[in-house]
Length: 262
Image 1: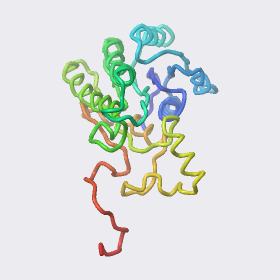
Image 2: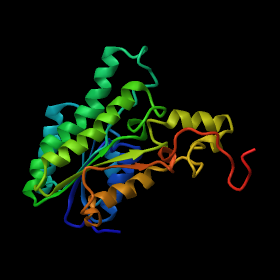
Image 3: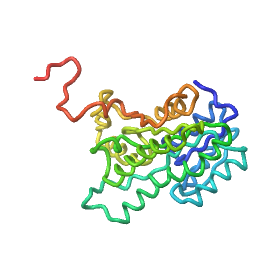
């Protein structure tokens, strides 16, 4: 595993789930970590970490994003890695059910938030000699069937955003990539996991992917560490699916391994 000693890492949506696991994983590899979230639980994320700062903020508010970037630079002298992970689900509303207000809120947090992160963090990362920006997209942004319509559209936008940003940051030394998680147990999906367990159907979670299981936040964190490290120095403008293989196939009638189709 790469060392991040001497690096300053900012992670949004860090009060729980993927954000908390990633913030702690970076800290375990020596990074100074700034964990941000609109929930006060973000302070629990940095509890016990040697070099860390918790910031409560709204990832979709430009003044808050600027304040977060300034706080990281004031405390630790700059930013090397920014992980724009904060997001909301917006529920399962379809095109004919979602209100304009719901669309605007989901896009504000999920798409405008990462755009603001890139806008304000990239110049600070350039000033440090280069680094990495990561954004959480989703398999829902790759094709339909993995989330509500506003959520899916917002995550498709994140995928295009990292491609566009990678081009606009050409020669800057800043790489921009997206992670597309599949079904992961986080605060956003907790209700579904709890319901399945109450019904004795936990084994059905993630059954559509070849690994036949849901993922863990720590598994996404490990991909984030890779993409932020020098080991990924030639990976730029990409959307990496971490979904147990779910997005490797179009829908089919599945068969169990080793058994005939009929």
